[in-house]
Length: 143
Image (cartoon, rainbow, N blue to C red; front, side, top):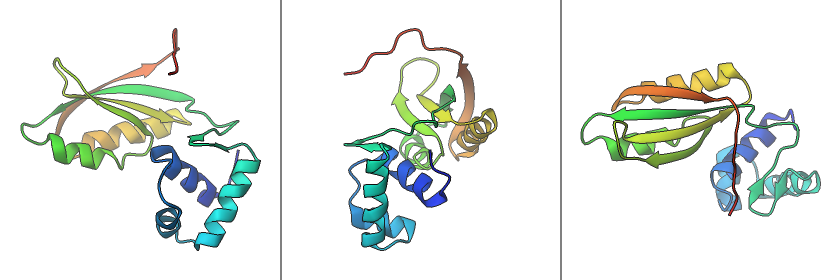
């Protein structure tokens, strides 16, 4: 929808936390609050921002993957904090079974998805990962 790097960065911040205060968004993006507010209003008019949901027509998580993550003992809290900065991380779940965490990743290209998976594997405390690319969604429900 937008080729502007600041717009894309703003949308990514809002995707991660749609309730982030404007002052904090402006600080993170290196903008004044007034400039930030103008960008948000323009993105609202364009339909990219609807309430607390970010929608980008023409841009989707074209490729998605589930990444099962096995952690080193007693490293869960630090790994969870570090994983928050992985580009494309949409969800992170603690699970039972052979893996400790399952991450849902989304990206525009397979290459970007590959970089995100590599970033997870590079986090200190991650012993191993196992990835499964999502080929199609058979059932999706919304609350």
